[in-house]
Amino acid sequence: MVYDPAVPMGGMFFNVLATFAEFEADLIRPRTREGMAVACAKGKLRGKKPEHSDRQRRS
Image 1: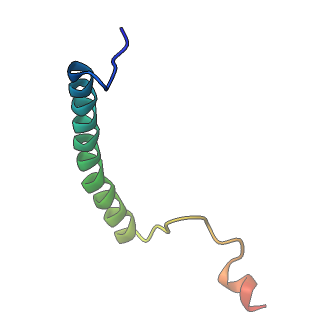
Image 2: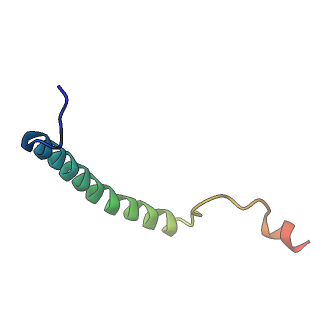
Image 3: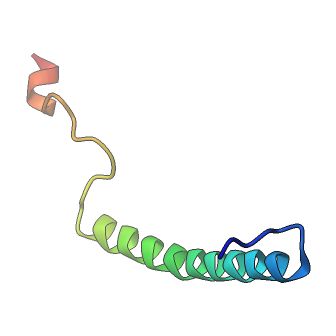
């Protein structure tokens, strides 16, 4: 069955999907921030690892 957003039932279907997607994003965001805070407390770097250590950069 194909849902056409131009008809009322199809529009409602897409609105429900969008609502659930927004809800899931709202659940993921705090978990991500919490995980980043835990990693920061453990001294983990975010992003790409440095190509050279501090010692290599100084020489």
